[in-house]
Amino acid sequence: MSGLIFNLFIFVLASFIGFELISKVPPTLHTPLMSGANAISGITILGALIVAGQVDHQVAQYIGFVAIVFATINVVGGFMVTDRMLEMFKKKDKKNE
Amino acid sequence: MSDFLPPSIQSILPDLIQLVYLVATGIFIVGIKRLGSPATARSGNQLAALGMFIGVIVTLFDQQIITYEYIIAGIVVGAAIGATAAKKVEMTAMPEMVAIFNGFGGGASAVVAWGEFSRFEASAIATQDLVTIGLSILIGSITFTGSFIAFGKLKGFISGNPITFPGHNIFNGLLTVGTLGLVGWLTYDPTSQLTFWLLFGIALLLGILTVIPIGGADMPVVISLLNSYSGIAASMAGFVINNNLLIISGALVGAAGLILTNIMCKAMNRTLGNVLFGAFGGDGGSTSGPAADTDKTVRETTPDDVALQCAYSDRVVIVPGYGLAVAQAQHVLKEVADKLEKRSVEVKYGIHPVAGRMPGHMNVLLAEADVPYDQLYDMEQINPEFKSTDVVLIIGANDVVNPVAKTESGSPIYGMPIMDVDEADRTIVFKRSLSPGFAGIDNPLFYKESNQMFFGDAKESLQSLSQSLAEVD
Image: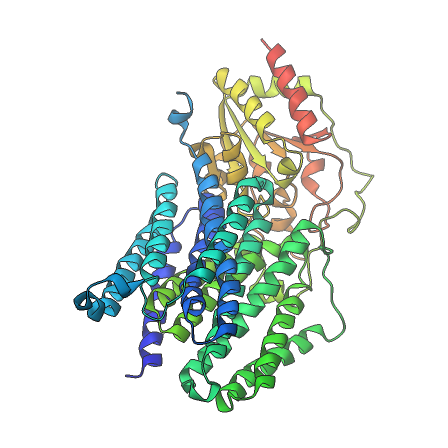
């Protein structure tokens, strides 16, 4: 099985897991979920690391640097802002400390 | 970084890295699962962040990575920008924040593919890698510029009204076909720099042209869809560098974005096709739509009167809309609710799925004002309860309580699920004027006998109501 086909299998199966995981989320959490999922899509930073860290090609290093900046904004900003939102979600009995 | 490791470990390092990726994948899945319930959501997000951290650290041991200057510099710059933005942003500005983060994520995927393309001799890249490089550039670029246009529209830099030109949809269709053709051509002849740059340029243009004809009111759907794209773009980047963690996480996000997009469309009674190609929904009914019918009478009410009605009720339901957030009135609202609860009036909040500027946005805004989440009820949960509700306070909401959605089949909002507030004994609408909402249509609820209008700015009205409540005994 060629690499592309194998990767396609993984892609499709992971998509099904994604549908299963998300479809039961209550509307209350849709904004944090969107924001958190968005942060996870910054996983592309791993690719950026490899492009920026190689030494065969100078231009690719510059490109990799840009990719790292973009991806890190997405990852750090995304997780932090999601945490900020979720921090505020409180149950009733907790608020009357 | 792997140099200092003993040779025995170095030889199995690639497998070790893959195994750690497997662990990170598991952490992501558990994290997303935990994001699905209010009690565990925060830990879920932190788990996902941990998974990302582990993924980054272990990747640094990859034998392809030799130098760290650019990596460190990039992470420092990116983290500083991201953290500052995340700390400073107002909760009301969350949709544009998500949009712009999303744009950077999509852009990063496109740039990774560009880097992969430029670091090797083009003729030496395998055909299947060329396909995924092309797709990654295409989807990543559309996400990048599309998200920035969405950001501009939400922020008001760009008109929220649909911007179109004759044949817009056809032109976009041709561009889409053209870019796919270019991906094909790049696969056939990867040595042509022109093909590569044409693809990159047209994909960037396509992102702009796809989002610009969409009205400001529909931006949440667009962000949700672009969020899905950025996941798919990350997945494609994973195909390019042959990394399962990227493929899986990207696919998870892609699926999540699609589901949320679907939920949004349903709540707004629109199909995705209609949102993307319909050029519907401007900034809101500031100018559009028919003027309110002057023949019909409305009953205007006073703070004292509202205070009395609420104070002697058993059950009050509050239906907030985005107008509440615009007026920054969440905190005063909470004050009013607290006073009512002290008089042992049962207070609940009924939240329409599109009450804020994106799905679930209103819940975040109320959470910011310390409203506990177990007092927030979804539309399906609260609708059967209106029959036994004494007073409904509708604050800054309009279309989502418009009974026309059920009765008039010709109306643009016909079929949109609404809050059945007219089943309650009494409704009180807090609003500046009788002007129509986003959809630009009049609301018959305002003229119903059981309805009273409380005209004025939401914050000032709630403040005076709060004062009046203090005087009720």
